[in-house]
Image (tube, rainbow, N blue to C red; front, side, top):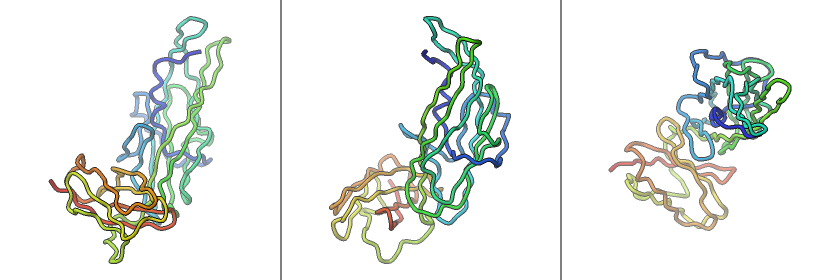
Length: 252
């Protein structure tokens, strides 16, 4: 069996863990099948990136869903238009401590052609960049010849950071040069890193604009900033247990 068109709504699942009590209200104004992430979300080639959450600060993300009513399937050499019986979220792994989510119905399941929503909420209690895997299941039913479920894993990322509005600490183990920067900025450490560190660059709204890893034993590490808009940013660097940050200004 080959599933063909009308499956693009799988690409945007986000904000998922399963609770029995409803926390959001479906918005029927979303009539085009798809998943509508919270405002401020962005995407890369592998995941949806949610706006950064600050440790100890309550957050609330609502994702709206409009389910396909049918899709195209190749079966026994024939191309069939098959109804979508239902869409459900079966499991989620990797949410930050202190955060949960709830669907608008206890089973986190929606009929083909229906609307639903998922609400991610809570107060994150641990710093880090979280890669969350959610599993959606779409059931296709066509008379007595087809009753099949397609399970698809999807990934989204959420950075939990210290308050991005904090002033730079007077004692830090790295500086940024030049600052202001235009095409590139160099992270300069006071001594070689004992272990690999991760970094996240946030804009003034807390949205992640860059992220990556800095190898162990590095003394300097260069970041390309030529595609960033002029403005204020904050660079956060973490070794998994401790996080330090510096403000960065981009100016042509």
